[in-house]
Structure formats: structure tokens, C-alpha cells
Length: 389
Image (cartoon, rainbow, N blue to C red):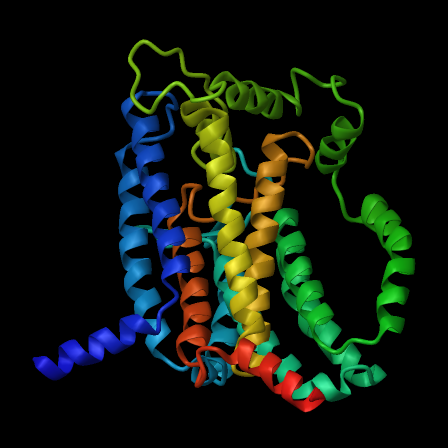
């Protein structure tokens, strides 16, 4: 028993408590917000199952997170031949009778197994970050060779293409940002970066004319010309802004019987930030943004201090995923981004999304806890200074 306590104590010392605290704070807040929506009868499509699912997903996610933190991430990454095919097969099953489109969604991105349903793209994100971390770390020295660059691009385009065909353009953007951010942190030549920047206008024209549907085009156009469709595609975002602003400085409170809560479609999911503003006000909204910013910056910093390039790329991929989710989701509520169905990490309703986020944090904690030198970053700086002397 004494040895177990000593082992547990040593294990806990290796964990990044700041990241764990931020994650638990956000997921705990999510459960309370969903219960508040249910108790106040604000949304008809929110029932007890939503906050219970969130609670169970958080509890299971925490257990998985702690287990992953104890496993060397290098061993997990090497198992790409197991998790990558599983993620791809699940994603492709969406195009079979098992796939279905959720009410109010534009994309067919879910699998229905009767007793439960999952969103395969969440699993695919994790598989891509892991497998691409391995690919980059193995091929980084040769990545600027045209053939090697082509293989890296194909690796990135496979998940992007799958989710885009599903109609889930929001997730396709998330995958694209993960791919681009990881490539930038690798030793990519500035020539490829310049070529990519030059190609952006041509790619935008192709996407506009041959990929995006009329609804997605209109969602972009109403941002450029606000007020042109107030009773149509703008309706949800306009309500979201009203809900966000209605909380004023300190909010209406979570359980205020005398308060007239504003109902926004999908307020438990993609527009959860609008409800945060409504119940906690400006102060609460800023606090949530600061917590999410701290989480993203901490992951990025842990990546820089990682033991090797694999660990760094893994953390950078998770950082890019979380930051893109936060930026796009809050941007939707503020009406500076189109509505494209990207949830707010650890806060929006959804068991699959919650579990995948916890697992991704487990990978980050694994890179943190398996550093041989906990002050690796500072040691490198000291060595450089000694060399100069």
C-alpha cells in the first residue's frame, strides 16, 4: 500500500495541473449550464439526458485522460496501423445506411448504432494528429523534397476530403488548420509557404463555384452584408447576439425564476457561448475566454518544451484543434464567422466531442509527464548561454 501511495504521488507530480484544472472547470461548467437549460425549460430539445450524458462523458474522459498520461505517447503514436484504419472505416460508414443527419444540421456526419450514436470525425481528428505527428517527425528533414511534400499533402487531404464530402465544412476547416499549423512548426521551406499564399485566391474561387452549396454561400454573404436576411439565415446569429448582450455586466443568473431567458436554436450546442453571456454576463464571458486562452497557450508551451519532435507536433496539433474550435465557435456567436457547426471545446453539449477533447488532453499530458528533464526548455537556454561564453 505504501509503495502504491508513493507511486501515485510521483505520478501526480508529473501531471500538468494547470491544464487539468482548466479542463475540469470548463466541463463542470458545461454540466451546470446544460442542467440550467433543462431546469429553466428554455429549450424544448434539451432534456435530462443531455447533462447526464455530459457528466458521464466527462467522468469517463477524466479516467481515460489519466490513463493516457501514464502511457508513453511514443508508444501510442507507433500504433497508427490500428487507430488510423479504424478512424477511416468509421468515417466512411457515414455514407452507408448507418449514417444519418441530425435535426437542424446540414451534414450527414453521425453514425447511429441504436442505443448510442457517435460522430466519427471526432475520432478521425485524434487519429490524424497522432499519425501526422509520426509522419512529420520521420520525414521532417526531407519534407521539402517535392515527392515527400506530396505525400504529406495527401496525408492531410484524406481526412479533409472525407469530412468535406459529408458536408461538414466546419470540421474540414478544423482539419485544414491542424494540418497547416503542424506544417508551419515543421521545417517547411518558405517557398512552399509563398506558393500556398499565392494559391489562396484561386482555391477560394474553386471552392465558391464548385464546392460550397447555396446555403453556405448565403451564410458568408450575410456576414458581408448584415441585415439582408434577418428572418432567415441571420436569425440564429442575431438571437445569439441579443442573448449574449442581455446578460449585461454580471448576467441573469443560472436559476432565476423572475428572469426572461432568451431562446436561441442550438443554444446547448454550437451557441452555448450565447447562454454563457446571458447567465454570467460580460464578466463571465471574459472569464471563460481567458480560461480557454490559458488552456491553449499552456498546450502550446508544453509542446515547445516537449522531449522530442513527435511530442512537439502532437501538442501543436491539439493546440491548433482547440484554438480553431474556440475561434470559430465564439466568432459564430459574435457574427464575425459563418454558422458552420463547430462546438466550443469542453462546453458545448455532445458526448463524442467531450470524450475526444479529453483524450487529446491525455496525449498532451503524456508528452508533459514523460519528459526526462522537467525543465527541458530552460536547460536548452542555459546550454546556449554557456556555449556563447
